Image (tube, rainbow, N blue to C red; front, side):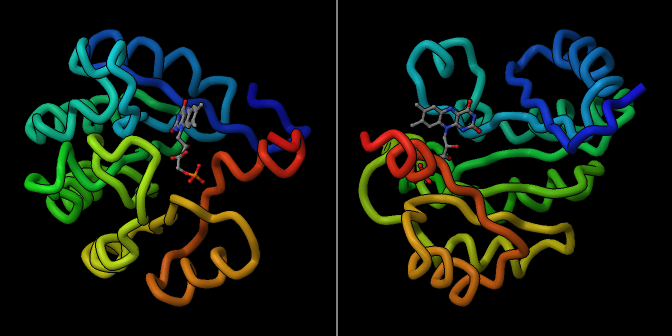
Length: 174
Ligand SMILES: Cc1cc2nc3c(=O)[nH]c(=O)nc-3n(C[C@H](O)[C@H](O)[C@H](O)COP(=O)(O)O)c2cc1C
């Protein structure tokens, strides 16, 4: 039975459909959301074909999300980046695939893998993704204060925002 003292999601990552299916079945019994990480840029992750590397294999993205949706007892969401690099912006394409195979929501970090965590966030790309799908879209990247949060909402029309590093920086002063 799911915990009732709060809402908690769990994130899984990988590129092996069977392993992801197995973990989604397990964790979806105890958590309210199963999120699939398709945005991690870390070399140790992408060298195995996981995280943001999946953005170069959209066929597999579709198969993974479809399978996880099929076995999960909780709604399935996906976290993506724009693509592998600037030449390969697949954000709209991947968002449509993710929606088509049954994900309930997607979060987009407005950078490519090769940008890691630096440089500007592409609000235009986030806006286009929001316009391309009907499922809720969460915008992410460089939100550090009220102004940047408001800008993300107003410029892109996203349904929600995700704040990463600033949550730690503010509270831990790092
Ligand atoms: C140290 C570190 C670890 C992260 N781990 C994850 C993770 O496990 N899953 C995930 O979806 N994103 C992870 N991210 C990415 C953030 O969720 C977010 O997409 C990224 O930092 C951009 O947002 P920000 O500019 O608000 O930090 C991580 C980021 C950092 C810096």
